[in-house]
Length: 608
Image (cartoon, rainbow, N blue to C red; front, side, top):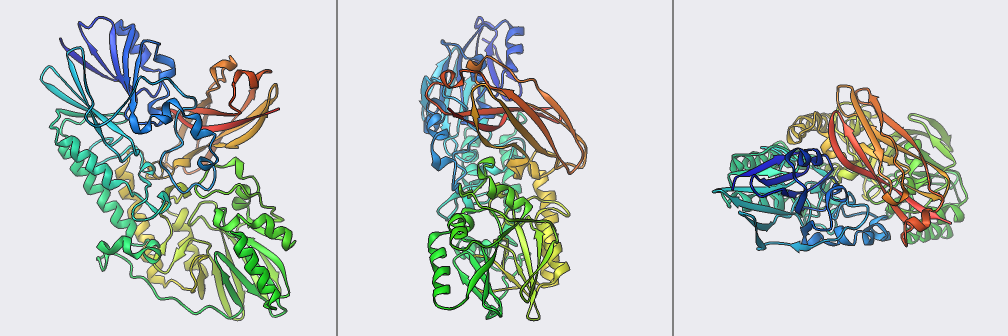
């Protein structure tokens, strides 16, 4: 009995020449495999074996599986297949997001599962023997399948590796590493991933066959190259990481390593400033206060106590540095207690005025009123201080910076973007883009231009400043990283592997009513130096009985593009959706000729 292995984008198919019209699939990210099935005369899919829960590896099941098809999924991730509504309807998976695992790129609706599988499971399919191995790393519950037949051994390894020295993307490795949440775990799951790959190499297979990527006939060499790449990339990250200030125990192995920037000293804080939690206050000569951020009721009470104690007479202005919950959770109550004008960079304001429109790390449902959306380099006077606002894509893309000039000082309030150890780029979901003139390179160039006497972080008690040499060192590091991380992913720029929001829906979540027309925008960031063509379409629930035509856009280099859809809702949408009032709308994406499947999603919330 001769085995044929077919590689059709995401699905992988096993077919025996004389095993009649039957096949077995490993992962099934789209329905493209159907054309090959038809060509081969296959009429029955016996099994679909899933390596992990990501939608771009699983959503094709609804197009291909029949009642006779047995679906085998990783036991640890079974709820994300047969009870996925528990994820989509849980507020904990929508707001205050500090964990990346499980990732939200999962099925829109549940499917029936035959079995959950894990380490040690073993069965026969025709002449093929199949073993299951737990391979956490890309996801917590990922598994791989060893299939032996005709004297050959193939490992179907999911997305544990893409090609020698490469991964499909990097943001799935965002995982807690000696901290309590995934938020600070940049590449934190690289250790588990490499351990899983070592386990698979030890099986001595003839080839690794990944879900995305190249068939690898020398698995040990492929994994060795990946290990070298990952460790080099992580070293360059640590070299200027702000986390060395917050969590020094995480980096004891890197102490005094050559090529790492020494951690600088702090500076005394001017006596007209106060620091409470994540809030800085400026107190003017006339005793008025300017407040930056208010992230909790305790901080609000402390500000009120300062006023009671006579530290200031009134709050007359407020600035919001960025959207994270520990900076805005109490802002609605603050605005009631202190009804002063609130300022924010326009990019920040877009998130905090309508947080439902975004899905981002640490996002708060608090809606903040912004009275003045500031433009980059917009200046104004507040008492004896000259204030200048800057778009400041540091710790997060959605971030502002504020230069305060007065009392012969130049104070720069950088939100959470720097410590004296370097840059706060520890969470890929924050969109820390690499490249000249973007992300932290932009921020550091601004520091070189402004030369502030003091820099302030909302979480750090003391002030600090960077020397010209330190700024140059960090910018050189970032330029090196841009090249290294591009080599680590199968894209023509590192940001496609680091920035999971390079494709995104706006608004991410919105209320909809039966019979109305709903507008949904899909936004793309072209991180490349070449023009790219993108196309996409929303996938509506089958019960709605309607399709949305695919649209295409040409996006110039280093620019954003968008495609707008007008979606006509059914008149009886609530009945068609059963008991669920939150409907996941996957977006099927093709980019630069690459079929990415249901790559992103938006949420429709059904209202009466």
